[in-house]
Image 1 (cartoon, rainbow, N blue to C red):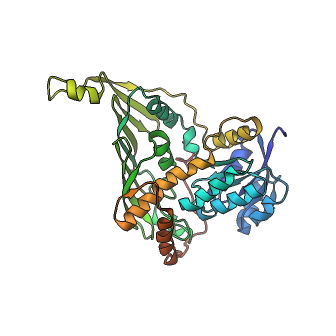
Image 2: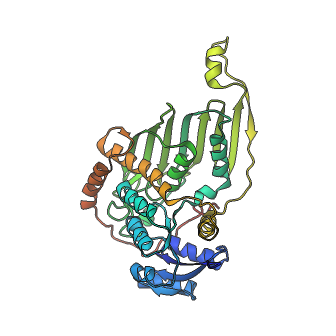
Image 3: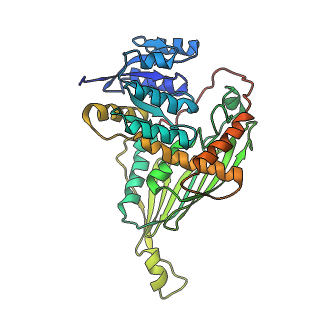
Length: 388
């Protein structure tokens, strides 16, 4: 096997450009960028200036069948992720796809089932899984030392966007263009981390407010209430209309409370479990004693480069992936269930009725209207995605 993997980037928008820059900075260790693709000539021209050693394509199929790549990194609009992933796998290529895996779970499930029949790697770009803070929180929760989860709350509202952001592309913030709003665009990483750390809920009740803070047809303000198989509950709040926003992830367990912010973990450790103390304490007004502990991490946060390097190392050396492609359906399931709950005004029990969801989504796609663009580009702050 070759000592390096040849790869192409399909889609040279904000993320595709960022991936080229990571390569140029020497952060992609075992891959060689040999091809780039975008249907917009100006974007392709800009990509070739950034990556002069790569061959340019305006058609993804031509890149996939060019013989110039062993793998592709897909960074196109959301709806095309599953179809391009399948096409690349059929073409004998390994696939690393940007989030989300797709817009609706039925399509993604079909992709996952197909990927299982191939001998190529399918992975997803959940770069926040490399963040030392979230890795440590997962380690603490999954270790079992603090007992079962009782309650989860995540307020993730530091996604403020102005109207110009939404007006910068006719496809933005439309059911036909993006397939959703803050849950589909800004928060997929958080939905993934939520289930990665705490497990999948069994019931979802959600309130998704379309165009509450902006002139858009999709949601920009969301509250999700989740119920877990063990009786635990969770609340997830996100918005692009709050300023200042917040990022506070709080997990209450039987023997501790974990508070996680963007760069800090604080644990309040109890001397006795709540479940035991509740029924053994002699004083009905007392509570278990405890202490606050500041948790240290290894400080590593490799983000997109880390996921990409793990992808190459998996193919070349059999090392673990950061996020196998089949895990991309979990956060999307929560997203789809939240939309369906809000649309129908009722609680959704998982597994999701995928045909019903697609039916309801398509109803909204039929009446979806592209916005009049006020700019062809938008200055994007990718600081959260890159962990800065």
